[in-house]
Every structure is written in structure tokens, then in C-alpha cells.
View 1 (cartoon, rainbow, N blue to C red):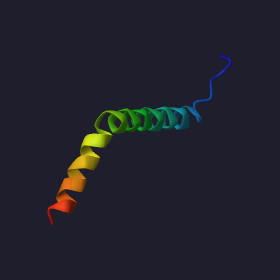
View 2 (view 1 turned 90 degrees about the vertical axis):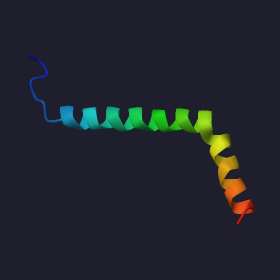
View 3 (view 1 turned 180 degrees about the vertical axis):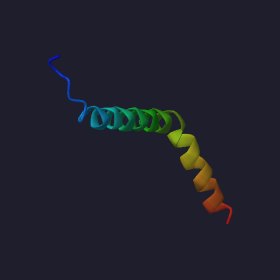
View 4 (view 1 turned 60 degrees about the vertical axis):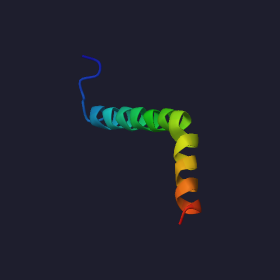
Length: 47
């Protein structure tokens, strides 16, 4: 086989996992960022 070494395979899998989590965080912030910001503003204003 041309690519019989699997030493870099774990690193690539971790990089893909981190990329997926990062994209999920960006999407969630885009969807819920303003509502969460408003919630924190209301909590600070009522203290």
C-alpha cells in the first residue's frame, strides 16, 4: 500500500473533530447570539 503508515491518522481525525466543533459553535452563535446577549443585558439591568 502507498499509505501504510497510520501515525498521522489520529492527528487528522482530531483536527477534523475540532473543526466540526468550531463550526457548530459558530452556527449556534449566529442563531442564538443576539438572544443570549439580550438575556445577559436584562439580567445586568435588573440587578
